[in-house]
Image (cartoon, rainbow, N blue to C red; front, side, top):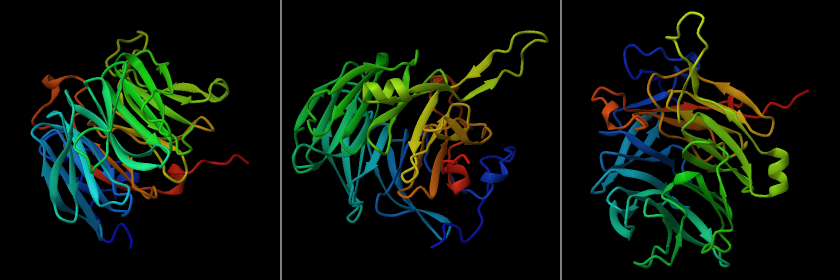
Length: 362
């Protein structure tokens, strides 16, 4: 089935100038009543995805013949910060500022609390761990712990202390990477999930906003508040040879005086997502733009202009044919700058190989 059977290129506002490459994106207007915190696609269906938001809800959306439809929703008692699907696509997990971990059964539309932390739950992932490769849910919290949950048991099967509050977490295969406050990075081998395999620090000078693991499970990218991205590898020798960092999500200040030295406007890198097939990746930031990159050849594949609203989160669907990005307040300037008229939109972009596939040099 084609992703597009109709056209829906409504902008987020009447004044927005949509790039021609994004003009045919499917637009979900007002997908939530407050800022969008996370987007997660089903691992079993191309056009089914969950959206968590600061309004305390997780909503499940489906796109049929180019038309987005709300399928179901469930609620927390506070802002929801993270959501992910189980590997079989039957359940959606979420965590948030009520310190609670919830599990929603898609077939029955029933949700239940399956876990709790002593502070907000910032990130979670379904992982396979231990010698038996058992699927469990790992949650990271501002209480400076990660916890592993067997969905059949009410208590955490394991708790691991982190150096600081958990800000971001991602996994691929046996690799789990946790980014915390004070720039700490904890690397865990899920074959031995109860211990930190390697503790290190971000090479970036400012606060970590996001970590994302490579498809090969041999490294991870870090995005920070100072508009930088770091490419890191678990193996020290590979890191020496192939690790690097680069600037992104910066704009030239339009108000500089004549003759004055240019001072760039620096925005946080809010989200990093790796293409599930090609291994290239996207970054998105507080400047309202997203870009596709090739880490192996160290260049940008394609950049897009600012959408005039911050992008808090992006993600690819299971085969990388759809790229979802949210236009929503990202909180990096505090609650004072969250206006009632700030856009709150999700856009779905059909990717093409020219944007996301690495370019082999002749």
